[in-house]
Image (tube, rainbow, N blue to C red; front, side, top):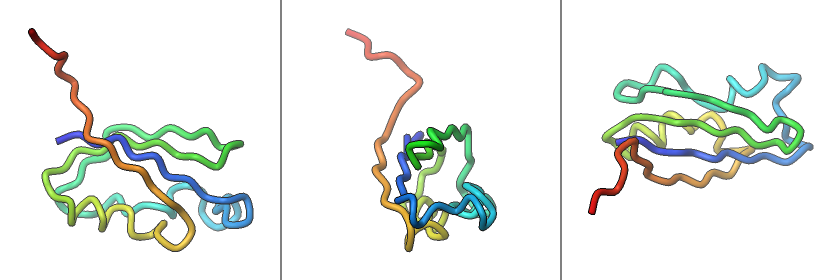
Amino acid sequence: MLFHVTQTHTPELCPKDEGGSKCLYNPNVEGVTLRAIYGAFSEHVIYYIVETDSVHALQQFLLPGFKRCTCSISPVSEEPITV
């Protein structure tokens, strides 16, 4: 399943001098594929498209950012709605 993750942090907690946005997620979590990452960096917002079948794995993927970010997570699909 695909998820669109919006991860937001405050300017005070910005990781730009501590490894940047790559320190806010764990790319090595088994069962999670990072499909895309985009940043609206001046807004302190990062967007991910992640593929996983496990909510637990998704939480582990986002764990490094838990103390400095909030996230909204939405399931998304590549398939159009058919009538």
